[in-house]
Length: 198
Length: 216
Image (cartoon, rainbow over all chains, first blue to last red):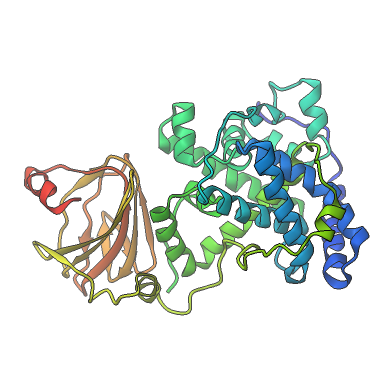
């Protein structure tokens, strides 16, 4: 498979350990209101939540406001965290996704003027220093790098930029069926790979 | 009830990530509430979201953890933490939709179309329409294609498209590339909830003539 590349990344167990460490921090916040643990979680997630909000076309002020609300929820509602149902990163993502949906439904429209995050995905054609440096601490970089570039592009547009599959078809000038089939292949392949890893 | 036909991954991702319009969201939510396979796929989509989030390059922040911890009196909505892989519905799919509509399906304002069919329009947005269709046992619907997507959720009974049978809880995921002729099974009436983008395109002239009057 010509599109498969091996990117620099952490050993498989390092990502699992990192995920478990985040979950442990959130459990400490939940069980004892541990402020030091929350500060560590804050340092991990807040800058990434902001990056995500910005990638979705949210302006800086609104993005900071939404992220602040997400972190307040994490601090005040940690009692509801159940590590048996989700890891800390999935829980944080769920909080942010819900808050962003409320934000958009509240009338804020997406500017979509932000940088194109698809260029951050490492791949056969992306050998620039900066993207590699930015993603290489993540196992996701490796997994995304294993996908054919056209499948990876769809997932980034969906997850990072927040486009619907209909909007992606229009943006890329592709038939909707092509976007759907690429989504199906990418989703199922990532699922299989993550199951293999764990 | 264990559905055997499901929305494609693209629809589920759009649902999981909150990218859908109100009408599409409603029909997917109804299916997901009775479909453990789709709830599990949505939970995975959310998990993937967490991995994407964690992998993003950091952007500098202009507030601190102390700002959050010391000013947390802000009220946060009760649904702030909910997964979109919702808990299962307590009833069957007909009850789920009836509860959501706050009406039994029988009590809705059905409009008879003849040939054993009746229609009830539920809502419309700029790009999609939601409607209920009910058909008597054995009814053959006109062959048609679509100008956009069509999600059809079976609430009661069953219908065939070719060799495929769609029963209660199943969701048929059709689009521009789909030409189909649903045929309702002979063992009972069938009621479906559909969300359609664009006009249906009928192969035969008779339904085309009627189309402006029935609004499908």
